[in-house]
Every structure is written in C-alpha cells, then in structure tokens.
Image (cartoon, rainbow, N blue to C red):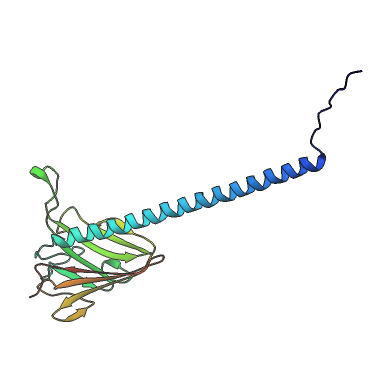
Length: 203
C-alpha cells in the first residue's frame, strides 16, 4: 500500500490567534481612520473660521478706506454734523457700535435704483458682529436696514477712536478721527486687535 501524505490543517489555537491578530489590526486601522477623519474635520473648521475672520476684516477695511466726509443720518433722525458716529450702545449694539458713509459702491450707469454712496454701521449682538447697510444713504424714519452677519462666536467688541493722543469710546466730532482701534474677543481665538488709520482724519 503506497504512503499517502495527509495535509496538516490549522489547530484551534492557531485559528484563535489569527483572529485575534486580525481583530487588533482592524481595531488599530479604525482608530487611525477615526483620528484622521476628526483631524480633517477640525482642519476644515479652522480653515472656515480663518476665512470668515479674513472676510470680516477685508469688508471693514474696504468700507473704511472709502469713508466719506459726508454728514450721516442714523435711524431717520436729523443729519449729524459728524461724518462718523460711534458709541457703546448705538445701533442697538450690546457693546461697541459705529456708523458712517462710504463711497465706491459700484452702480455702473446708475442701472440699479440706488446711489453710489452707502450708509453702513457695525454692531455687536448675540455673539455676532453685524454690518448694517441701507439702499439709500439717508434712510427715512421707520425703515429697517439690511443686516449682514460677518463674524460669530464673538464675546466682546470694543471700538475706540483716536483724537490727538487720546483713545475715546465715543465719537461725535465734525471731523474724522485719526484712527479706529477694534478689540475683538473670540471664543476660540481669544483677543484680536486691529488699527485702521483714516486718511482724512484729524491732523
């Protein structure tokens, strides 16, 4: 009778060991995948937050760069001699607020039913910095401005105006201040401070 070689299979212990190794590899892979996914989500949120902050400062800088020496009218009241008005609680702000008129609001050929100058205001409400604007520079009494949320997760918004060598929290002068200082407190980024020099400010 010829010799027949019988193949040797895996023992029960070897099967258990192989399954344990595969389970550990799968667990490690899942952990790495979860970590990468969370890291990617955090990176996307950080990028979105940075883009939002950059957009806010860009819009504000553009508005201030084209500020006009024109008298302003707030909430339909009589025109104010100051081309810029600032106070802690103005425009129903919970902290700092200010308003002015800027030029350069493009309206080629005057096609749109509005002027090329725009009345704008900035305020802090319910954790957001908002930009208010109207289609007409002299809004009538009772008209509501458009509200444009620019930056959220804000806990503080302080606005100061430079006159001579002194920083003031209120501005109602016939001329523009030398500069504006914004101090913004953000939930995640902490305190940020920006200075804006006004070309037509006091000399």
